[in-house]
Length: 418
Image 1 (tube, rainbow, N blue to C red):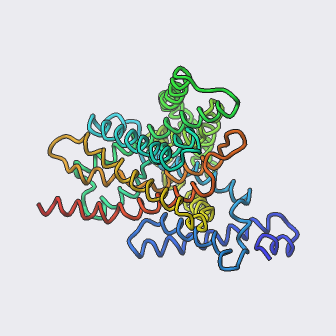
Image 2 (image 1 turned 90 degrees about the horizontal axis):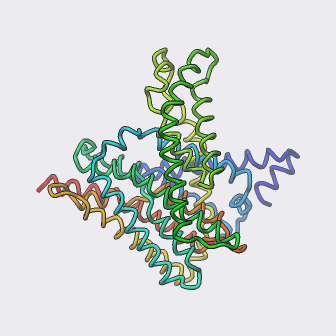
Image 3 (image 1 turned 90 degrees about the vertical axis):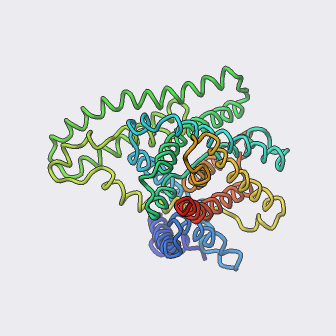
């Protein structure tokens, strides 16, 4: 009997099934994360792999968690976790930092999006010729992502977080996130138009790009001014939890607003994090309260692992029995690795091009978020990414996340030894 059925029957409450699933997922996530950390790998990798194992226990004859893969309540918590995660990533950067990263970081970021996108599209057209252009485009968009958190941890571990290469990598990764979200907006907009029976012209694509740019930069320009005043007046309130409540409300409002203008909600959540700088809530911290990033971190630690485990659970290992899926996973991985190495072409002389290229390789959480959006997009009643293609993308994310830390460590130490 499935876990959800047992809980519902025992307690006669829909909530019982959900809380039992959440308990199982959270414990599994922390065990997987702990094992990954002990192996000197990112915790997110352990959460993803443990999810793959849980989601495929039915292959061993135990199907108690089979319903959890597509449970709507668990999926909703995972989607909230994605918004909080993008909000947290945005909080770690500022608009000022984006303006100061320099021409090198900008060129590296552009190449780091364009090259993987093109290679991903070519892999899709080669191995999935019958899937359609929109599937090929979405695979390219998925490969364009970069996970800055994984690279940042490696740079800190080897004592190179203050190097010129680190500044280029981290600056480029921030711009990469913005450009990747714009690419995602264009591709999803084109798919939505095609699903409604229309087609997207060059003018239509230009409008989607303009809309995404206007939302991102418009929300940043207006939000920086407005949020400063709102948080100043909110600091006069003496109720507990005002800063956290207002910060989350701001995140969710911009997520809703981005959806209202036809963009993915993660675009708004990321923009909200970029807007809210320390200076905006200094009145709270000056009186001894924790900063917004510290307040959001426990919520992210609760919700984000649910997303990663759930993405792993939706990976069907049976699909890898097909040589076609294995070939697709391998080709996507090679395209992902080679595409980010193209970043080195934009690095000025005197910097370590190899290390910068390797630093841009991990797809991590951002690649999974893009892939999950593909599961929810449909074109004429068919999902853009079926389970087999999704599984191949997850394998690409696992390999790039696994390979990058040791490769970057080796490259940076090689450079130091020279």
